[in-house]
Image (cartoon, rainbow, N blue to C red; front, side):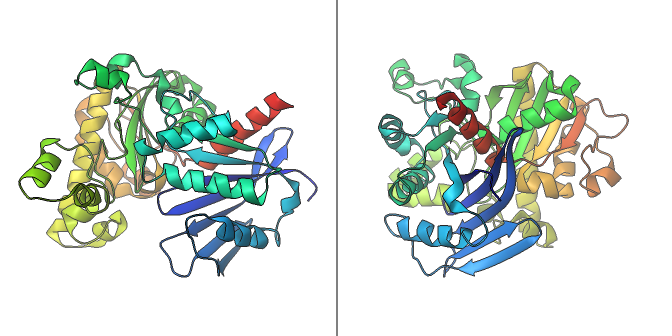
Length: 394
């Protein structure tokens, strides 16, 4: 393989997805992908190259930096790809605040801004920064780019972004930012390719994975989204609470005497599907369980998703298309059916056979809403944005 390669890093709070792309005249083409899950001991590097799958145990241990982990991972990558031909590294960075309205080349100035914004995304941003710093030490010659989840939602009106708090707090940056922007950007583009007549209208996208949110699109642009200032907001998630009366954490600290760290742990790691069910954060396990707590967790999940979709419909003044995406949205017919059933009053109706088959279009013939299932690809967006930045610099 003689073509130049691009490597992408999609950092979560406890794992990193790695994408390998060949740089071709038509654009970056995925040729491999990997995953490092920091929750597993020993660390395992999961690598996919075409039909071949490899699982390799890493000797390196994650510390304050990720130099040893990435060095060993690059060593394994070199057995399958010519890492000397890496042209750039692209990163997903969760929070761009009001500073970044699009992807940016990583330099000292942008890195400083990303570090300043880390307090707004304490679970995700530090991980991305560790990766960027590790790459800069391992491959100082390699250009790096950052793609921001918040950037896609910069088209939201100020009214949508505002909380009913003192104006000086809003002006200081306490506002609704929205997340999962790379996923929504991909879905907007993919829907435009598949059904341009629908993509030009009013669309609600439900990104349902371990993290979950919804977004209202009008002609492919974000007009509103369920997540706000933090990744806790909106609908319940695997372990995150979703929208919560702010009086609850105040009560937990003032009346129950819980510390800030304890409350943060509850809201981020012990709530959501896990908290309601007391069984699991994995919706697949809950759907397979006969226990009433499992059923209640799924019912609450679907109830809140449908309610948020209805709220977003109010922002758009109606909608014609509903898209399900991400791990749960793409693969779990029961969740899609439960959500759509609660949106029947808005004209949503699912074809049971198509839904069970995870078909691309699952709306029934009499549905007034066109309902789609589209696999998202955040790494492709990172790669596309990285190439656009490289082309500008050439």
